[in-house]
Image 1 (cartoon, rainbow, N blue to C red):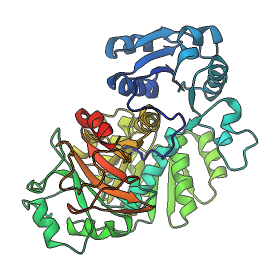
Image 2: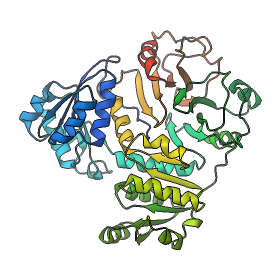
Image 3: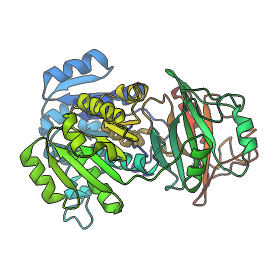
Image 4: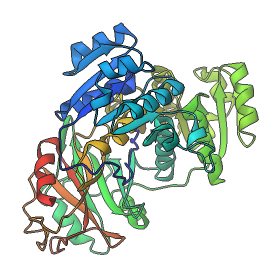
Length: 469
């Protein structure tokens, strides 16, 4: 899950009025652009996709309910034809940073209200940068690769987790866990589980059972092979994980397969923590030399990461975690399976197809990360109402995680959680009030200004937004 990363920061650039349907232009019909267009069109927005390549546009026309145009993202005439001058949001996610930057500059001059650019190079966002994104007409820069790297880092910090999501300024955490036969709370109603452990503040907010996502109630029980999602204060999450029969061990020895952008950012993320011993395997000699120069704290090995003899000779059986983040997702899945066979406790694979994320766990891997979903989650924030402060999705979970602000005129104001008219396919898992976050009970009262962390299936999102307004 790239969440996944998948927490969307609380930012509101446009002051949207409710779940207003908008005119959105997406530049680039590659993997990221296609997924963004799909999610936006499903919400009913008027979406136009433009790309130079007619082949990728054919896929868009065949599978999405959007307008697909062939054109050049750096041409003011083509941008105007795509409707950039009337767009509420323009999203530039072509494969070339410079094209995305120029497209946003032109769209700024043409009159697009909000401009979002995918820029892999961190030159614009690093502290003290000479040129800021707003100088180029960019309201938001998205970094899918960096988001994926951060998600991988969080998965290593929560060793037992299949997914990790930080909420409420890192005060709360959502962790995904797959239940095995040794889980001590199988076949136990959730309300009984909570009653037996009053010392812990936690809540099970979603259950994935087969292909079905369940927003649970107190009478629901946990079954073997369920993937559950637990929310708890960050400092209490280790205890909640132990309650479910898992141990959150500390990892130190890490092996990384691949030397691309995600691998580089992941290695830097780990190095900055100062607590990991890292080996990185890269098949291209020149790239390996370049990485060795940029990552002096990492042992960079030139070799084929799919060669089991190489992996064994480099001590794969002794590492705590194996991260397969090469551009080849099939190789990532296969090498992770090899690593599990050789006894590696934690394996994480980078995949480009969202459908591979739930599949990876069914075939025995621990977690998968998808950078496209991370990019799409960042974009979703701009199409929500003013009371929807953030939104995130988790691969394989057919529910969204929303952070909603309660209006003084909301029908929820003054009601206890037990009496609040919350739709059936939704659940309030956390509340942030005056900067402090907590897990509510049925007696917790909702106040104006509260930030509700809600888990909901797609069919009740608009009803929820109306409730908080």
